[in-house]
Image 1 (tube, protein in one colour):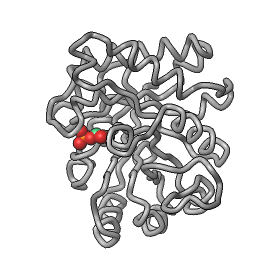
Image 2 (tube, helix red, strand yellow):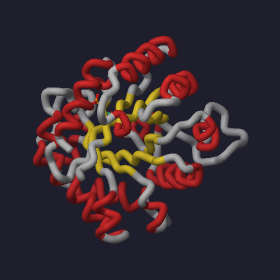
Image 3 (spheres, helix red, strand yellow):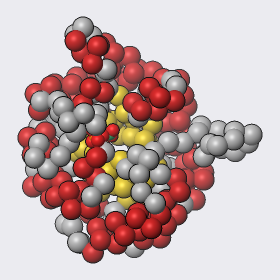
Image 4 (cartoon, protein in one colour):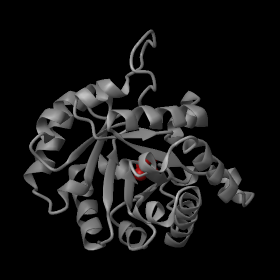
Length: 253
Ligand code: PGA
């Protein structure tokens, strides 16, 4: 059966009180696919959300991590710290971290390894900027990101990873990739994973699409056999639109 993992990336939004209200409302909706929903929140909200979601199937995610377990790394948060809070997923290499905060491919690789060691599922974000797509170099660009991120990761650990394809030109711009563009790239990524590991690993790996996914375009994107869910920014901030997206995802299974 096709999966549809729907991850709401709140980015730098919401106070603790707002996060709590959102979680209570979402939980009260008793959505049938609640076990395929992840709320990816800022660090300050994680312990409150963990409390609110603890007896529910809805999962909790973080937006970043540092790859060392502990030490003199002012401002950073480690995988064991996230694990202690009950975090199940963590973004790695979101394009905003790569573009605004200097995240490198090497760091992404180390972060993935640190998360897997802690039993947290990394959601590796890849995707090309507009200039790269205009120069038709998007496949080699995304391919290089994938190879760097999976460097030194064995077959068993590779099965603990989720990939999110997010073309940078579609993030927060309202400019969504067409279902064909998204499907083609997700299929390309699956092919790379099959080459690195095997067909079974590639077939079972959840590959999400992200970039201006909204209730009015989600059905087409999630209908693709190559797209196993969404990484949703703007449309995840309101509980009604996130629930609507969850509903659409459920109907696309
Ligand atoms: P968007 O963000 O849905 O607001 O485009 C997606 C993301 O950056 O994960």
